[in-house]
Amino acid sequence: MAKLFIKQAKQYAETRPDYPKQLFDFIASKTHTHDLAWDVGTGSGQAAQSLAGIYKNVIATDTSLKQLEFAPKLPNIRYEQTPPVLSMAELEQLAPQGSLDLVTIAQALHWVDTRSFYEQVKWVLKKPHGIIAAWCYTNARVNDSVDSVFDRFYTVDSYPYWEPARRLVEKEYRSIDFPFEAVDGADDTGPFEFVTEKMMDLEDWFAYIRSWSAYQTAKEKGVELLNSHVVGEFEVAWNQSGDGHKAVKFPMFLRIGKVGKF
Ligand SMILES: C[S@@+](CC[C@H](N)C(=O)[O-])C[C@H]1O[C@@H](n2cnc3c(N)ncnc32)[C@H](O)[C@@H]1O
Image 1 (cartoon, rainbow, N blue to C red):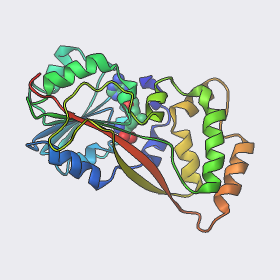
Image 2: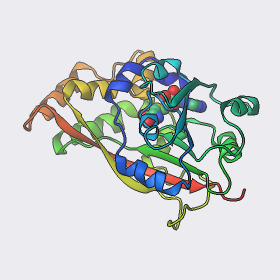
Image 3: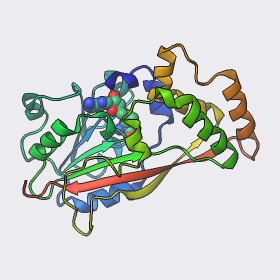
Image 4: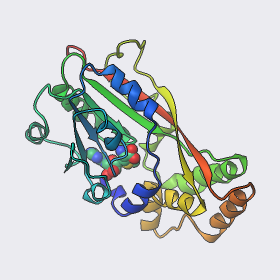
């Protein structure tokens, strides 16, 4: 699964949304100190760069070196390529036991083996207040005409090419295993809802679709999801209203919990 993000790393960096300040303010308000955070599956650093403005140091890891190449280089972010599952020795090299205030994993929890990942998260977080924050965003929303073309394209054309793990995103991470305690001030571990937005023109929109793992999988099977018929439908829908640049909204769903005494 990890290899699905290699080929379209450039499109990924250019077209995926960054995350809103409210999300990071909320997460940061739940960690008692702001020394060290680890962003897992960092991709091109979408979350890592915001964390770097709040935490003294950030470790940002991804299985794909190609993705990391497009991530912003900041003095307090240490990027590392990692295997899909870290050994305990590799984890120790990354950060000492009980050293992290925060682990984040943005739009990537559904790609990892959660059983071993959670054990390692619990080992590496500060006890009892260390926090894990995992979020996903669901399908982009533009306006009625684009959304109706998109919904058919997603549920019919692209559907066979998504990994089964994608269903966890469709369910807004409500069904994902998340064995952590509610953070201070919360009754449960969520999901808490946010929204992020990205301005796109039609070319950005197509590049966003090309950044999907499903687009890549279809291509490897000889299927061009953005064939001339689909491109035509999107062109008509996109140009039906006003400006070529549109605010594309992505509903976000955050699971957040603390490690507790463990
Ligand atoms: C959908 S992207 C999310 C990237 C970024 N966090 C974001 O918010 O846009 C998923 C990322 O997880 C990485 N990935 C997949 N499996 C992984 C694993 N087992 N460990 C670490 N990273 C992984 C992929 O290479 C890819 O960059």
